[in-house]
Length: 211
Image (cartoon, rainbow, N blue to C red):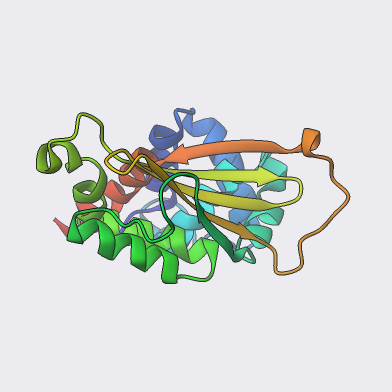
């Protein structure tokens, strides 16, 4: 199983950051008990999918490394509050069975952090790559679908967006705290965005262990 140093390397590749910068985030999370810890080097703790998800949340959802633990704790409380499509009918579904199954899976998960873990699982078993990367070859479309994840604050919330070019529809799932905080103007909101490529990169860490 991968170690923390392996996870840091994968996160660095996924986010286009240096490993030293990534380490600042994961160290804060590990010190708070939110990433597995048990010594260092070869005897160090083996990373789990939960550790990987917490690493993603810490880096993508925090303005500063010092906020990592607070960010993880808050994002793990986010629940699905809304789903909508910006174009097309609400009943629109992708034409390929695999895509329909994956989107239905995502929509059935209540907690945002569990959605991230689901996406990692589907990246590990190859479903996510087939869903997004191979779409062009299988459908004849000039453009692949894209899956993006938006981390926003304040107040803390997230959005998963799936762009389906064959239907010209943007499918959105919004996640927030069960009782959203108020009092923040829209101009204060900050955001970081990752896409399916980041998920695939981090999942490679676990795929290597299975090969």
